[in-house]
Image (cartoon, rainbow, N blue to C red):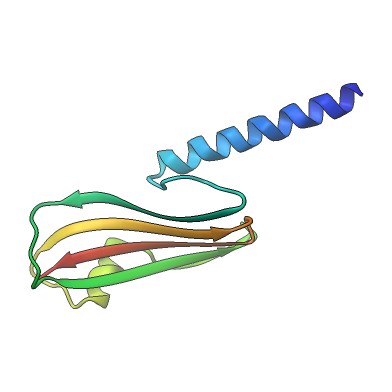
Length: 108
């Protein structure tokens, strides 16, 4: 019984610290079941004529991560060369099996 309680406490603390780690890196949250969230990081102005670019990185089972979710990659995707006016992040994930983080950039 004591081993069971110890194991439960270990799992609870592990989940808690994963969430702290995720939010410290700018991710909205770390969720084990399902997540579909968006978060803004930086904006200077609003303009409807601005171009939009997106760059993503994916993780499978938390073991393999591929992709480039950098601001530079998102700006290159949207052909943004002069000025970046906003940067935001999106996150999708299902049961810890699949995670997708994207950086969305708007600008000229």
